[in-house]
Length: 330
Image 1 (spheres, rainbow, N blue to C red):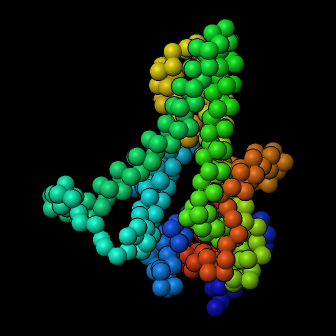
Image 2: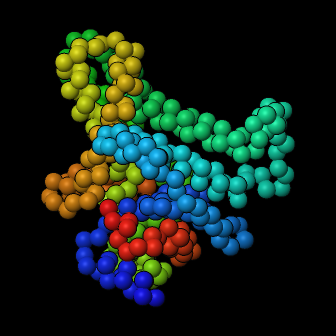
Image 3: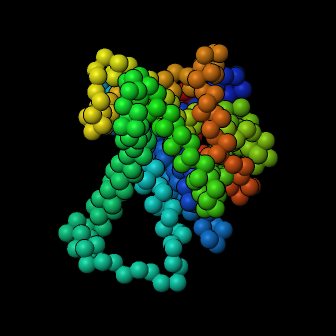
């Protein structure tokens, strides 16, 4: 009781921002704390399934991965892996065909026999993560470059700076169109409601309020340190960096431009991470302006949750709270 009182007094001091963040899942939420990870899923019978385990941070073993720029790429890949792992675990409670389970293929049986169940699962998760990253790279980076090349063929006299502008505009349109389309799907809409529960829970904690359904429900659903904002800043940084690079290196061949975009991608992610890390911890005018577009985009990725979803968010959050007050400060 005394420890909890100290925690509340520390939060009430004002200006507290936590490093604890999460991800919405299929009927659940994952929360990542400084030293624990928790996944909470509401099963079809209404009960909560809770999976909490310690986090093993790569920087604890290899301190150099915590250096600026390097840490951005490492944390992005780590977040992707944790997210895919949690998403697949939550999906196990909601199979597509609940009446009859599909018989494993001969290839799946062979892999399970050769690698073992744990290694086989890890392989599937890694493959899913890589596939998801490849799809994102194609959709948001390579496809706009290809379409920009098509515009150049239609208008051969267009200057190179205009092509950079066209590619950037196409990239933004595809990104927004993808988010809007996803928000219209029924199952994704529910997931985005859990996204709202995650944000509201974090806001409530940062405000120094007890984590009750009533207190959490009253919080805003759009959070300035949302992953959606991160992705949008990735798009913006890629446009700016591409325009800078291609102003010095004249590359007109579409495939060559695709290759350069792929080479720049780790640097884009690294720069974006450092930008988000800084603006997430400060409240100046410039920082609020940088966060504003990402906050606006959340209207398509974050919806009002119901009380059962808020309960999931509260449970997942409390599972990863550090024992020492302030140990999770941003």
